[in-house]
Figure 1 (cartoon, rainbow, N blue to C red):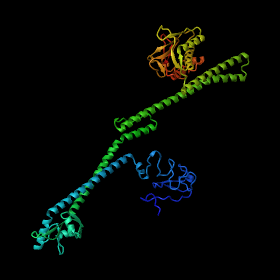
Figure 2 (tube, one colour; figure 1 turned 45 degrees about the vertical axis):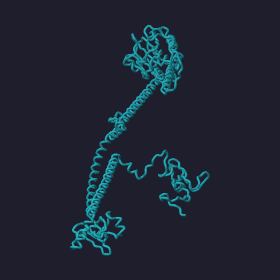
Figure 3 (cartoon, rainbow, N blue to C red; figure 1 turned 180 degrees about the vertical axis):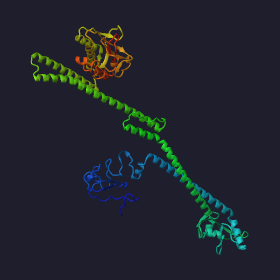
Figure 4 (cartoon, rainbow, N blue to C red; figure 1 turned 90 degrees about the horizontal axis):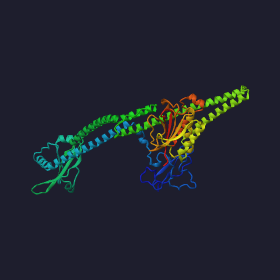
Amino acid sequence: MTAGPDRTTAGARPVPPPPPPSGSRATATDSATGRQAESASGSASGSASGAAVGTATSGPGDPPPGVASAAAPGDGGPTAERPYGRPVPTQGWGWFARVPLRARLVAITVLLLAAGLGLASAVTTTVVSSYLVDQVDAQLERSAESVANITLNERIGAGSQLPSDYFVLVRPKGGDEIPLRWPQTVNLYGVPNIPAMSDPEVQASQQVPFTVDSEGGVEPAQWRVVSFFYGSNLTSEREGTAFVALPLTGIHETVKVLGRALALSALGIALVGGAIAYLAVHRALRPLREIEETAADIAAGDLSRRVRPAPPTTEVGSLAASLNAMLSQIEEAFAVQEASEERMRRFVSDASHELRTPLATIRGYGELYRMGALDTPDKVDDTMGRIEDSANRMGTLVNDLLALARLDEGRPLRHDPLDLVALARDSAQDLHALDPSRDVRLVGLAPGAGAPQELQVVGDEDRLRQVLANLVGNVARHTPAGTPVEIALGVARPSPPPGDAAQGAPPGDEVAVLEVRDHGPGVPGEQRERVFERFYRADSSRNRASGGSGLGLAIVAAIVGAHRGRVSVRETTGGGLTVRVDLPRAS
């Protein structure tokens, strides 16, 4: 029994080959299906597949001989199956995938058009040829016996020859064949090669035309032949067999001319169709070229470019709408990122500037002390006090920066039920302790209304106390001593009055409202929009002298935003500044 060849031989039973030497390519054959998995040893090639499948020697756990080993995903060469059933492009179509889409569409259109025209031409020539042959058959069936009888009579009686394309062959019983033909017909088409036929064969094929080749002639041709018995009408005896034939050369010429005409027509139609297809594809792909140009401009940095919209019911229109939506999101994301980077740069610059002042103060007094300029205990005490004030201010600034950084990180806050009225009452007492001359009152939101007994919210108590401390601290720093202050509380709609500067998203339907109203100099309208910016001061010299860092309201906005609330500022009725905080109510 011989071993079958490789898998290319149909019906051969594969036989496992001998083990190859180490480091060479190996083949594992599946005894049931004859499939071969090819892999390469990875010891010398360093390929991404790792180790080879099917080594020269078998070890513990190896599959038995003749059983294919399963290759790891990505192993096994170009014929191995890939994971997830993804098709592996063959090298035969690799070049076609690199052809531009326009050329591929035109080529496919021309090929389909040519195939359709070729098929139509073949069907047409076949039908026409069959029809013409049927016409010859009908002519033979109608006139065969009369032509043969007339020809026989003329041949026997007058010895004339057949003056037409007909060829008559008479085979009498017991005699020689009598060919009756016209010399010009024989010269042109030759003589039909009619085979010898027995009576049963003639009986079976009587009046059924058949085709034979010719012998001789200028142009080799085929003949259509019909056979029948002839004899005396009186005795009804068969005297022999007659064959009447007509050449098919005219039909073949007609079919050739028709075929050439159809081929030329098909070629012309294919060329015209290809040109029309090229123009149509060129026009249809114009939006894609515009998208490509737009993408190139965007890649060059112009994020404001957009794809020209198209009808949304088309594929290009849907693609353009999706791309424009994506580009808008990308532009918005880049704008947000640039704004964030700009804020970060400004933040770092402002923080460096703010830290530089106390550091310079500490360094300057340290140099004075080192140089011996502080020669009295009073000067030393005064200098130490100034150094301590600068260090405290720097510590406050660093703490504020850390608080902002933690809020920017989005660290989770505590969500405990709180009474906002109690927090406001504590802050009012703190402000009164700082300046006993101030009139600090808790009131309701409506004019002349009293403060509510309680106002429940959910939030982080320490952070909300920091909000109130910053608001009260701003009032203490930026208003003259003795200026009255109201802390108003209540429930209202979240929308602030028109013209307010606001930060954060508005909460739900009704919110808990906290307002800190002072009657000091206030903040001008053009500066009111910037009070929540970090390190912004309406009067930087006064703020710096009083120890303010410009981060108080920025921290307030960050904390309120983390509580899904909203903070806004407006002018107090009669003069001053009102800071309003909207927080979601406790359910």
